Image (cartoon, rainbow, N blue to C red; front, side, top):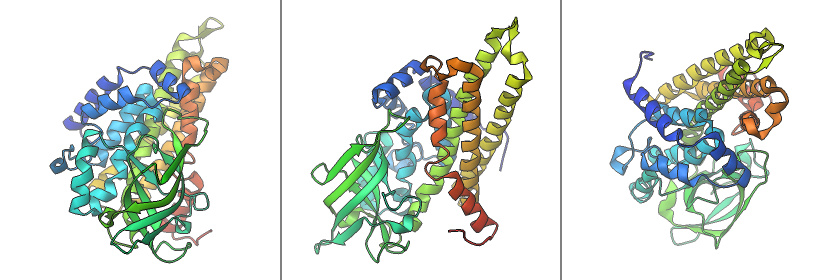
Length: 386
């Protein structure tokens, strides 16, 4: 892995920072408070080609890797957009990765060009009420219709961006019963309002991008909309999950960076007892620690992205990056609130918004405890604990 300056990456940072600079914290606070999708921001990013950065050039995308996509989302989050800005984009970036890897030509030609321009919005449907972390318990069923197609029935939760999306990458059971990873198949389905009931889930933060419950009632799906092989959906979707962990790690570090920037500014300007509060080690040391932890986590997500883009095993690295970034982001955001004192609890200074969004990193898309389970069992070879 080359740690020397990368001119292409430096150009990405400069260009994305320029776009994000047009949207200040007040914009994001308003979107969050009003539960409004950030359409103006999304369109500017789409017009710049950033939404399709990881889609192949032959389909109109940027032809870049997960490393470049992660860098884009890191800069978006670090601008103060945090998760409201980055999750407006990232589902298209990682959600269609299984289609890129395993989709048939008709599927790619029908959807990738529109995704590359930002015209096509994509949701990701995996989690179910009775199958959260345990994906093997998925019960949403795809049944053959006798004409080469499928009919899907079931219910998914935490389907982010479903209200804005035209299609959803959906994991459903085509064979067997819940309790096995075999028999799960991946489809790219239309979120047809005649067969899909979508409702936003009230939640504590990241409210500009809704998280939804989606009920599928006899949803017809054409046969060519299957992604990859029948019964191999869980294995295929790993090509979405590992990039998702990498992208979330980059986003988390960005949130931490935004929080730390506000905290250090406040600690420099705020005077108590005739000197800046940042002169006190009780303030400065936690902020210094936050800086170091964010940089350490950033090194790991960059390594994980590099390994993924070079077709190397990256499960350990992607999960480690997500874990470290979630912890570093939350620590930085929490210390930003603490540094501001009572004003940290006020919306005026925005650090409470960062804190709410950083907290989510520790439970989604996978909890810190399940990440530790993965490392304990898959990396260290310890007995399974569940």
